[in-house]
Length: 277
Image (cartoon, rainbow, N blue to C red):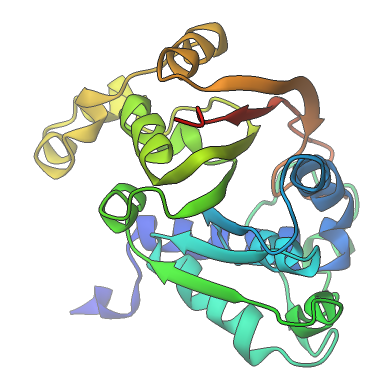
């Protein structure tokens, strides 16, 4: 048929997302965002975790944060569920071996709020630096990626991680209590959980959920639990976690820094400890 060459809109949305993510994680344009977003996490890691600790990073996207964690002297495993992210992450981690060897045009998809027509078509070079370069100071760099859904992949491995780092991740849960429970399960006694991000609950979409096609498609829209931060904190402490650090920060996410529009998140950075026994 005539539509055989057209991609479904939800596939196109994912491709756009991946291009924006490449700019955020692996280009010099994303440097400030990475500083604001990853910087505070690495700081907390250095304060609360010994070097060579085993760190798990679910929702790892294209792998930049796990690479930075290994570059800081830790062993890290990234976990990612999205097939599109896994493919682009493989490109970033395993195929791009020279600085700025590839070119993307990540901002073509949005023709609104453009200051200058050249901004729309501009080239963005990737990577700003290679994974190998970031990790070179770690004598024995241990980096791995695991494909799969977070709870299914890790709940069967109790007490196996020194630290869990969640960055713009916990709000991807239809039921955040299951995430908290899983994090508590997989951390070793006295283990550390560092979180940084907003609470943009991904499955909160009543209008979308009520259309007949999506009703059949995904029950998670109807199961979504959207907590405020004070409720979330209550839930976390009820699982026995002890707060060691808590601070409000500000972050952009995959934003086009030449656009007339920019969304800023007030993000919560916290560090908690699982009870020793």
